[in-house]
Image 1 (cartoon, rainbow over the protein chains, first blue to last red):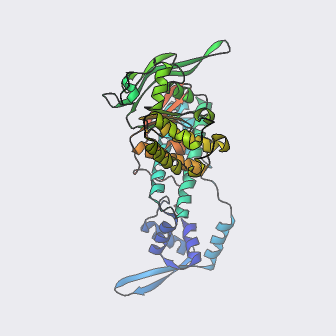
Image 2 (tube, helix red, strand yellow; image 1 turned 90 degrees about the horizontal axis):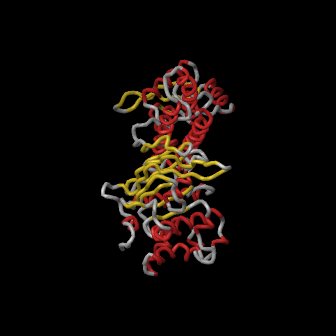
Image 3 (cartoon, chains in turn green, brown; image 1 turned 120 degrees about the vertical axis):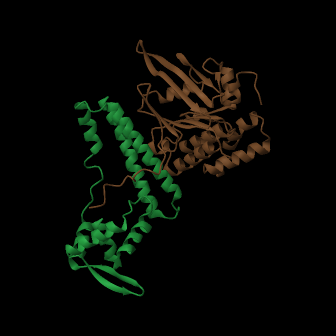
Length: 168
Length: 260
């Protein structure tokens, strides 16, 4: 989340709650929405690392709010993040390690593991279908995030079938 | 409209709400001097209005099972019932009547699903007219289906003038025009682009919402995820059969955890 907050702050200074809203409104329901506490903790760490600077702004009849802005070091950090390619989500696959090691140790049956995992993927797909149904058809960003997750799951299901064909 | 043949011809469910029941279905083919057991002891219950996706690797028996259930192939052994009436021993004539009314089928070869000398519109209307719909009813239903599938401007064309994907969608429209109580569909979205896949999914979901039961063979997890239940075949046998868990209590599958 550090990079996500830095990238939002690269556009304009904001306080914690504005950042939370911006993430939710931009990415929609399929984005794993942070709670406000996680945002504040992350902002504090970024400040300690010298990447952002918080400034208290007085508000009428409310406690002061802290508005954050990028420091030059923060600007460099976000530029470096933008410039590097991102890893796909499946560099290490926890399920595959389980599938190989657990039956060897007599802890589980391969078919059972595969079936359970497959059911889990289908339930996730169903959840994403529902999210897509509930998302405004003009909200392209949110729909693309859902679509990306759906495609990952499709690929996971195909690969699971291949594991089944090769290992059973 | 009651037929003199089994109650299944009306496509109603049995007393227990089971529309299709199979017990120990086996289908063997002679091959290389031996026998290939394409379907092995498959026992399934499909409830009225239930939407089931049959999945599994190629060669796992999905299409063969569907052909047996649609009366296009005869089971080697085992039994099945439609609406509480035996269906594995029906005559080809009974099956032809059944497929016109209670059971809609759409198989992978679009050529076999459409009459080449009739326009797309006539193809879709034909089963409705045969089943006794008025010309006006048949036309209205055809317009509704072709519109939903993005084929409204193709109604006057012969099948040969349509792309493979368009023919496939027209065949599906034809299969559902009479709102069969049971729709058997083999890869209804196979070879379709994403727009057509979305149209077909929408049509299937509408049919499902209307209370039609659907048994669909697919290799596409996204398409399957719209079903109520998924049956997985492996080497001709059912290796898993489970409803899709209700949503709402699942974490979103994130592209790797984003929190530090």
